[in-house]
Structures are given as C-alpha cells and as structure tokens.
Image 1: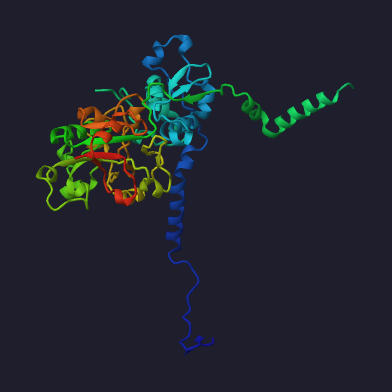
Image 2: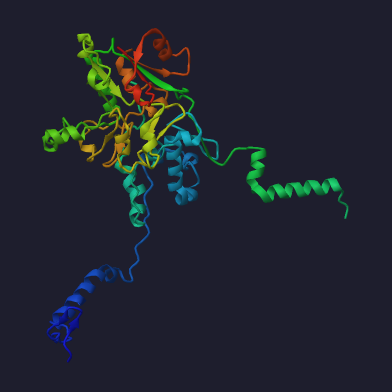
Length: 165
Length: 270
C-alpha cells in the first residue's frame, strides 16, 4: 500500500475503513418505519372513493323565492364552471375603475343576459341568497382543496351596504 | 355561373372581414348588447376632480374627533391603543407603532413643517389640524407601487386595491404625509364593532383613506364630511360652481408640503 501523498509531502497511510452499514438492522427498520409513516394516507385511502359533495342550497331566502325567480345571475352550469372568473371580473370592475374607463367606482350593476340588473357584489348579491357559506362555499372548496381568501377581509353576515347617518 | 363583378367584390369583402376579425369585427361595426355586462350605478356621485377643503376656523377639536370616529367606524379601522379587551392589550410602544390612521389630528408644526413662523398666533400654534390622504395629483405612492395596487382614478382619487397589495410598504416610504398604515397584525380583534358595510383588512396590507369611494358610488358624501357639519367641504375642483371652488375663491388656503411637487388636493383654511 503506497503512502498517501499530496503536494506538501507524505502522510500516514490512509486508514482502512470497512465498507459496511453500521447498525444495519436498526437503520433498515428506521427506513421502513419512515416510509410506512409518510405513506399512511395513501394506504388508508386505498380503494376508497370520497363522495362528491352535495351542498344543500336551501336557505330561507331561496325557499321564499317563487319558482321562476329561483335562478342565479347566470345559468347554473355556467356559474359552476366560471364563478371564480366572474367574481374576479366583478372585483376588477368595482375597484379598479380607471382601467375600465368608467368614472364611478364601486357599487356597479351587473346586467344578466335576461336583462335583469344586479349589484356586482359577492357579499351583497351572492350571499344574499346563498347565505350559508359553510354549505355553499366551503363544502366544494374543501373537497377540491382550494382556499380562496375572500373571507380574510370580507364579512359573511349582516347588511353589507353603507348607510347615510 | 352568374356572378357579376359587384357581387364577387361584396362576398370577397365580407369574407375578408370575417377572416380578419371573426365575429368581433362585425360587432365593432354594429355594436349590440354583449351577453352580460357591468354598468355604472346611476345614483353615484361623480366628479372630474374630487378635492377637499378643511375649514380649520370652523373645526373645533370635538368635531374633529367626531370626524375621526365616523371614519373609523364605517371603515372598520382597528384601535390598537384602546383594544376592546384587556387580553389584547399591547405594550404602549408597539401599539403606537401598529396604529392604523386614515384620518387624524396633528399640530401645525407637524402638518406644515417649514411653514412655521417664529411668532405664530397662539390659536394657530395650538390648533389641531385634521389630516388625511391628500389624494395628490402627482402621487408618489402610485409611482412606487410595484403591483399597481394603489392607483389614481380618473376622478383624482388615489385608490387602494387591497386584493393586489403585497405589503412591500414602498408607498409608505414614498408618501410624505404619513397617510398610509401597514397592518402589522390581524386587525379584526381590535375593531370595537364590526361595520358590515365595508370589509376589514388582513395582516400584511397597507391601507389609507380613499375619499370614501364606496360611499360616493352609492351617492353618499364621505363619512368625515357628513360628521363635520360644514367644517369639511368636499366637491368637484373642476366645477367652477362647486362649493369647493367657492371656498377657494373666498378664503386664502394652504396645502401640505407643496414644495415636494406632489400637488396635494386637500386645502386648509387657517
């Protein structure tokens, strides 16, 4: 065995280290336990199906509506697919009037395809009928694992428009 | 095949138009109703250039306090100095730093630094001036905002879009009037009574006075103007006959730190 050498000179012989895993049993057992632990959610849910949420849309206000008025600002199927984009559009229109080239600010009206006018407002218009946020919003959002941050600022309950004193 | 030259050109032209712009090109020529749209509310107060005159001669300390309270109430402004419960009490220095200020009072030498004369009338020296966002014509906060969360509307209001604010606080460094406050912690527990007509804010955004843009849209005057009983005058600076222009003609007014070139739009009658 040649002595170990670098540019500064000779050094003692390189120590011989056995090529083996120390405490092999413990290490392997540890790795197995670790793998099982992090994959537990997979094993637990294997083969199970989680039922799609069926939120109950019955709120006192919706119940009071006549059958012909029981419709959203846009068709239900469209709302299901596009409500997030519509809320973003409402928000931009209401807050950022400059970019929309409209001179008023908030409290814009939304004209539905059937010509009916609504206030473009999540807390006033949407939540007026769908006043059960836990059912109407959270059930599907939790199922789809999306976390919209509307409610950090906006309030769920109560009359939402400003009043003159 | 009978197609004369005129017919051929007509069909070719129409198909070119369809090819170039699709259905949109035809709608450009004959604009109809789009499927759904957003239109301005009819009742809204509108102006070319909103401005405010603060008549310090009429504004006593009690009225100023009323204006501040009215604003804080309708905008859910938290009060860190006087929390609703003892549990939420903060150390005085921290509470002072966390304060959210939309509208507040300050003495002359703070409001008009550099304009103090050596021998001011005692009345002016001890007067508390009502200060708020000046809604500058050349707002430095708008220039520095990296996300355009703060922007100037066409009617002059310097507006905040809380949805876009990332809390970088450049605007606070840019504003020479201290009109902007940062939410260092969740403000909701520190609001005495939640006002349902306006959202609260979240931790990590900057907020300020918006000249009550949400109230103007509903045809209401700003909350402070309503509470001031004539001491605050709010109106259209572009309209010669407006009350604002009327008082600017009648009285000599001063503005805050005009030498900085921000062109503030809150005028003070001293």
